[in-house]
Length: 310
Image (cartoon, rainbow, N blue to C red):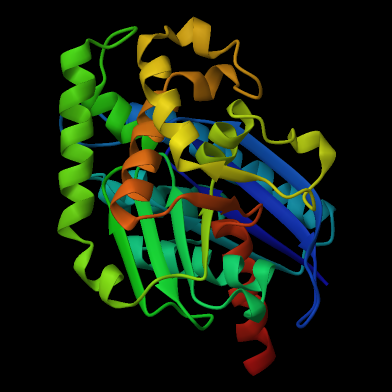
């Protein structure tokens, strides 16, 4: 059957449609996405502005029509940190529901970590042992670790690549003092939440997910996406630690010239690199395997599990 998921993220809004059944690998069929950058369109009162809400309504209407046209039998939608934290978040969801019929659920940061961990576990399998996962979105960082499909520990930090860039790394390029203060803030924030993760034990496999991780790996020599999902990609801490000061000296225009970096990702690449390098350092991780599945796939896999129980 065909399942669809609408992912309303801080940077990109994305619908993914897959052909799937319980016990089988979901096969991507259709992808439709737009960069709305919702987190950059929050007014002084903490509300998502009217033009962005209208753009979100249009996108959701397109998704529902596309789902109908393409034979999607079950469509799930969710929002993450940008809408979750907005002062008018509930109002935005109700406006979208009334105008389009789309029912969007709010995922907590812990929900995000757990769903993404499920996708990672299914991708790498039981033989990977204890897994520690690091996922960097536009608004938040998620870390989870465990032996099963549901992690033993799941934590969310307000350290997304877009948020760090917007709040701490103004300037093109930012001043050296700004980069130093951003690094200090990122490390202190992660360190406050490390106790339970460290108590869970050393991982047999460390995994990075999200576009930010894939972009950083690509800059450091990983295969391009055109070579397919099955190609193994990884991110080394030492190479990333050397990359951070290079990125800090680059303008956004210069970052756009790096391999695999789109215009939309160039601005927040430094913020994402700071978060990734800090998380790896504090967790004692030398190498991350890059997982092509993340939150959207986790939501779909969870939906399949729920359907089987109905």
